[in-house]
Image (cartoon, rainbow, N blue to C red; front, side, top):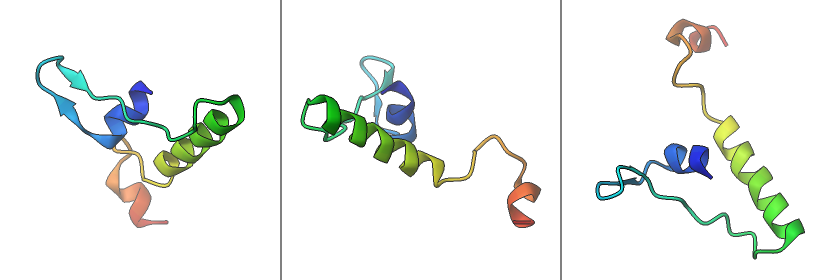
Length: 59
């Protein structure tokens, strides 16, 4: 949740952190698991902000 909140980027000034986002899994084990997998896939689709730019230019 914390990693996805930072990825989503909704900063909360009062709490001094990123606001947690709903996973849309329905609060059931299978639905929540599938929602987490979708969020991980969504985050993995973006290049790392920490990788050197040249690495992606070659790809």
